[in-house]
Length: 265
Image 1 (cartoon, rainbow, N blue to C red):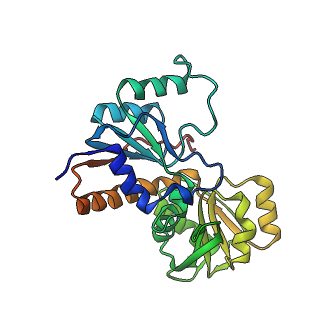
Image 2: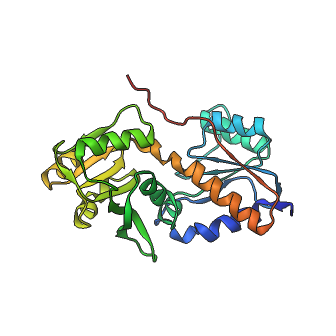
């Protein structure tokens, strides 16, 4: 098995989820460090916070692959007595590079939205909204069995292991087509409705968007943004198989840190 550097690992990753798939302005790619150093261990996480960085240090990780960008807006300074500055300092001092794959991983075939659709048991899936590349955002498909909105909401709650969720619509509405879009799907209720969805499963639903969805006859289920953590297992599985085929000697670890910021009562 061949020892590899970060550049070789990311080149393999980007065959699946190239940066050109990302939505305009999305800050995907390398955020901290460099890719021309040897890499033995890669940690895959939804978010990068200080607990995740501490986990990476304890595990002897050289590279973190995250879904949500650590640096979403340009920094004016790096002050190491602030939470973000302290996190960046820890990464640099411990030679840990951080790479983000966001909307490109959402859009990629087999990426986050396909992972979510698979978890929900959807069949005959298609893209919800075409983007400027050959693929698109969100997935729409049929549930494995006919359910009411209330029953399907319970199904969503169960498969994603969330303690609670919100939904909009008549609980007795029959669900025949389901759209799913990881993260913040507020901009896409119209696209979901046009695609023929009875319900959209997405996160971070705004109050007034909920009213709009209700008015257009679209049910919405909001199990939270954190369900995108399905990407951890998906990325680890994909990359372990890809590295094995390429003869790369590198270990992929699933982050065990919960980055859900909310508590529920």
